[in-house]
Length: 364
Length: 275
Image (cartoon, rainbow over all chains, first blue to last red; front, side, top):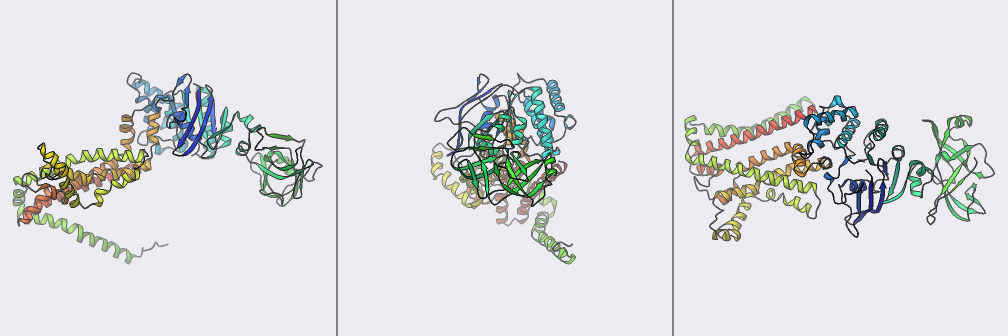
């Protein structure tokens, strides 16, 4: 079931939580709402669910599920599944009763027979691999197990859309990984339309078909994870999606200078701020004709696929972060206190007035 | 490592003092009540208890308590629901207003009701024209008892419901449950222990209330005498054994209430240990 939002806005008292928003989510899509806290992403999700109502004035917005206008439809009749951040399992009910709840409260005419409910609940519990815990109470389960029960409970009523509010936020890193993978698989199997909220860029990029980046109640960009990462529309999106190194300086005659640092750039004269991702910083023993950026290594973290190196220099307001391949790391024999030269492979620039970001790639 | 105050001498002294004071101020009076009540034998005690007026007082007290509890129950749940699940202007003021019956002396409460609903009162005068008498009759006793006891249930529920939040109710609604279903199957089971505890407190107070009731009841023997009022009258009449027989009954109700409360707490703690 596709979801279409038209002109959805929200005020809490005097503060604007959402500016008028338009959003189309296709059938079977898994969309992540990504943003820092206070960006309005949870509010938007709750409005889609019907747990909050959008502003009716100055002009009322519209919410469509497929062709069905659900703007004024009560939550209980919207046919949604909602997964809460802290699971919100019924604490006095067993796992079985939790999952069966949605089926047992159906009006008599639509309600399946008790045998059928039983079969369906066990099928769902099997799917989330918890059938052996059917008689436990929620408090007797781990966080990851509780979240799986909560998913099974939401899916039991066969919702048109599945909405998840920071579904893995309260879990530790390892469990979060597993659950993410598992949700992705489940989504591919059952092919429901789902929207989830997260503040974790990695989670959004890994899980979503498309990501909606939000800040201050506004949608900043809607794109596939690849496009989003490769060509962010503005500075906020760029900075939010990963670690960023800043290089501020003055450009004159095609050379940006900042203290004793120099970089050839193809830009008009004036103050500039360039942004670089950690993997866009190459380190070498020597400066080149195009760049002279002396740095000192202050910290090294060799954990993971790449080595993370922290760099400082007089001309830097904030330390830089560079990710280096282990091979390069060994070849340069990096150690703390070592002086090297940074070479941008590529940099990004976002001018307030110019919507189009400028990028310049260098042969590195 | 020794904890502070863990020296044997200190510990013995503290425990001893606590036990001694408890015995002196709590246990001894209780024993004295029963001792006095039975001082002239079981037969005299029984004669006093089975006296028509005493029986009537017992009956009236129990009826008042039985009528008070459901009213306070509905009022308390509705109020706690309102205050914890909705935000509206005046919510804080309402939360403070709940405490008025605790803050005001019961005698004052009784006087206010007399002033309002008495034959010469603002509302009472109007009702009198329709031949409805509230004061110096059982409805008056019921009204002041409700006034005095109405905060108990709400006071028990509000902190609990605030701590639990409304997520589970929201979950129930997203699963298609209607308002009543949500209340019966999700809200109520979560607050049932606090609710029972509130009822126990309400009952204890409703049975034992003296001040407010004494103002509005008029103490007509066999008509508007509750057990505490009856007790007082007997004592004024120098019928010590009779008074203490009634006192013993009240104390017995209190003990049963305490036992019920302890039982509930024991069950709740067992439940928690099991979780």
